[in-house]
Image 1: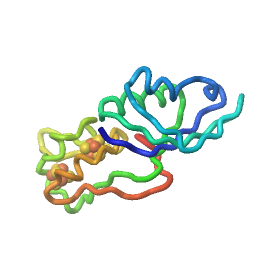
Image 2: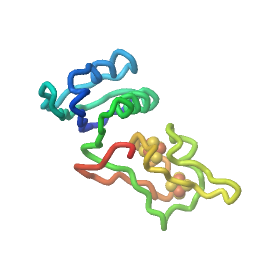
Image 3: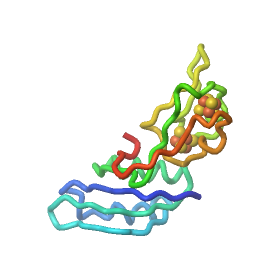
Length: 143
Ligand code: SF4
Ligand code: SF4
């Protein structure tokens, strides 16, 4: 299980819906709401810490996005040093979202940041240390 601090921006029409509660009900995720400004018929903003397995995380985030919620990673971003990566493929074996995948027939490793769930598993296994965490305050989650 891992956790991330996320910023959620709710459109006006969704501010009244129990989307966050459904993360627990439907996707077995736990959360701590750190800050929330949600007014009736107005756009809302919430900062929460989310806990769960990579699979639950992915499904829960997709559920929010499908409901028009903009999800930002409040604290970090995953990047790759393109000049350091040797395309060994080790990261593709652990990446739960296929953000890292092998392109055939040239067998190069492609990094699709849009699919990244920020689990940081690739950072731990990359022998070349090409994958790294970049602190940020305002990166869109999975966009
Ligand atoms: S494990 Fe590191 S060096 Fe190997 S393909 Fe992935 S990013 Fe590149
Ligand atoms: S942090 Fe790495 S292993 Fe995890 S989803 Fe993103 S690219 Fe894949």
